[in-house]
Length: 545
Image (tube, rainbow, N blue to C red):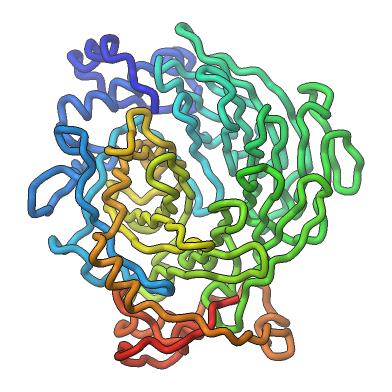
């Protein structure tokens, strides 16, 4: 994130300015004057509170508590990365959050900076209620407005246009340091695009597009939006009310509201059909392909030029990802990462053929059901590869899984768990403005029930030691060459009778160590009886499809 103006905020620090309370614009005076308070509150925590400061919950998590060397988790005094804190993973692994994975007995805490106090009462839902691009931070408010903050000047604005709460926010790739486009979609069935401009005196916003698809029926999937990375910030995709569309802004003809009922032809809006209830969507790095995942366990790729969707079949009967899908992101042009079962299971899938190179599953042996509701974000970095960040809205826990290229595929080779001050209901991630190859660092903008906060995530701490990774590689299964028969509705009653099956119970605790492999039977069927850890040469198993 861009640095705050240190001189202006030192005065606020000296005055002891408390974190502001965001009232959603109900008071004009408070709204106009709270911008400096937002930023100074964060800086106050850093300057007066040391390495970490109290979040909205009143706690004071200190980075790196319990580490033997006593150094704060993050960067040392010389700006060097900390030692790896992750555990190594084999190709197919389960991680039990209730098993001890740290010498101190508890995960290290991340450094937190308060941005604003705001009682969000956000429901558990997929979609990003917070967005950031390094210059701007925004978050949805209860009445449908969007709060916008300039991270450099701390100027604030209130974006209006939705008549019900926003469900997803997304920034386009920045065209310049001070100008960008923000897309928002809400349960009112509206897709709004605003252009944002930063100045010394104020943040200005102007409407670019407003498309009304109609109110979202109760029980429908959360409306989602995604930008194409293609130059010009002109193409985006939206899933709302059981519909999926591609939107070309330059073809809409202006910012006036456009009615787009189902089946109607609207210039600049192209329907994608045959996909069902889409829960997440993402563009490929080139912008040529759009990936979609659905409630009924399907993964599609869409040719953006033709709007034709093709299913990628990567399931195998009994596999943990054989359930409702809730997350998708591109690792590169050839691979996507999908999440299933409230984002407790993640798999790396090859687009061509649907081959799965690895899976990771998060489990709780103490609370077999209801322990998780996860949101996920894949952060691509220029110096540390890609990192999948997962936050549990039901516990103060955050997980980071670096994605490693191995030959022509990609795998998860480590997982790091961190403690956060409050359970995170929604978040987004950006590369820190001062990050470098020697000190890679990300910043997470998060919404919890009490506040909007920023966490600093040192990417080096997400890794496992080289020795641990080597040990996990030695234990990894060797995939078999023979094919696996695809499941059918006849052989799988669940496929024929339900599109939202109840997740199977987790395997017994004896199988839940992230450093031990599951047997082929246990991985194919999470409800299978327990088996002892495998000894000797690892047998061949089939990659899940």
